[in-house]
Length: 408
Image (cartoon, rainbow, N blue to C red; front, side):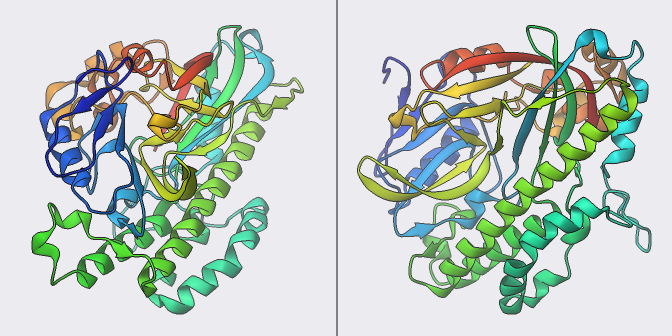
């Protein structure tokens, strides 16, 4: 069924599914997964689906899942608090060096990225000796972390402090971009790193264990949930809120280190205007919608309350957008968190070559090797079509194109 700006997915015995996907491909498996989630008895009102929607683990990426009286840990997932931060500087394109490889190297030196998982070897994606600003930010996080680890001591044996201010792997990135007026922006994408992953994994397993007797009745075992009032529900909310704060601090530390690297390479003082925000796109929080207090899980979606600034990145060869929310209640005031993949990482690695990657990123100073082929622009949906499909959710304030991209 077609509404002026969203489609209603036909369903039986479940909440309605409203999809802002006009003109954007949606895989059959993603529709199937959405219908399974919509069957859960505690979904409030309806599911809202963003144009970057694609199949995810646990629940569909690009979905907004409002619940009453229960929470699904696998819907939030293991990259808790993953999101974006962007800062506009007073520099313009002309202030950047002609050859950008030195700037990319300076950023790579300033922020640990990637990972080495060989046993007995130091992980290059973690701090060996963390700088002072990590200690300053960790001081805000440490007391609550102690409260959580007193209850769940296994979470101590994680990368927590030594991952604060580090990028990680996969689709996480740091970029230097230019807007439509050739002004220089710095933008980056990361989450709660090792400790968030451990918290997510631990509570997903707990939910499945708590529901062992009922798990066969669930549409999918990843829809195992905690009921409000249960011990694990309160503990999960506490841990997830902490991981989301860790993710926000993580991005702030990295941003200050990247700006410092930029000032080393460019011998010209510059100011920063915090135009765009530090926003999560994998998280849960309490919100009020349609006159009721509900928990809103955004799995690959950004909050777009009226006037709220957000960031929608394209792929590493496409443009990105700084947006302002229109406060569309039907979408629970949300928008997409990116372009959305059209194929899995494995499929992209099979289909494309290093030569394809070099061609697709010709205008960007970035890695162009076989390890980043899964992030090739062609593995993503057309960002312009994605933006057109959500014109009732956000307005575009700035269009950015990247000139430097650092991948984990």
